[in-house]
Image (cartoon, rainbow, N blue to C red; front, side, top):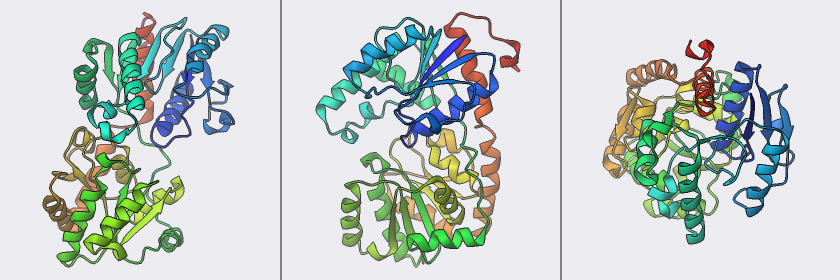
Length: 375
């Protein structure tokens, strides 16, 4: 069978990591298939799949032109199945399609997409995807329930397949590397790490309020907020100044994977204060690097983080601060959370993700599922 992957967003954080790891795992696990990787311009080096054919058309995402050109590409290359690892599908196509709908965040958190036109387009394309995809993959049971609720999708066509953790995330023990990362970002004491882009649902403001309470209770620490903030950094800096904690907060901006692994490894605690997550990769990345996790109990996060995390109500800065203080001051508890984190990670690996995804492809094509996929 010939499978096409629409990987045009592979350069994006989060979704891009999913695309890269999934495509590499599937092409490695089932080399008997043919593969066509549809990549962004100058994106052929972003995924390692030596036997796959690659094309890099100049097709803007969310454009009318892609609705014309993608079907032509599928027809020209005689593709049997299209997998869109994001929710966008060509409305007309010559083959069955599997779509990954990671979440319905912009339906549940419309404030994260300020453009009214953007929200209307998003809703229209999500609804079209839910109706037209041969099968739908999603990352969590929570997201499946949301897809059924908001998009009225048939639950029988939805498969929950947990993503894996990028193997590049592992504990960094080199003291020189850890010291260099601390120095580069101006970190000079023990720190709490929060990783993620700026969105209101990420709840950075709630975290700053909790951190103020931590400092008032004699915690001697810095708060490191890692990730691209765009206009949100100015908003958060103003809030930090109002709360009197600005001198203790570090904004790193975008961090490459090597430095991010070192930050996870050096952190005393990794905190995820989100109000809504369809999955929560940062929780697993932190565990993979040996960081104890303190986490919001909202949406999918308890499903992903499991037992090796301490939870709080993300709307309650007092409870968030209490859990942060507890883990920060208790070395035995931190060690237990780290050890349990290794066990939790066994539920998430790309080989298993690829195996289950290949089974979905066979279902979509009404083909017998090979015994190797059942193994």
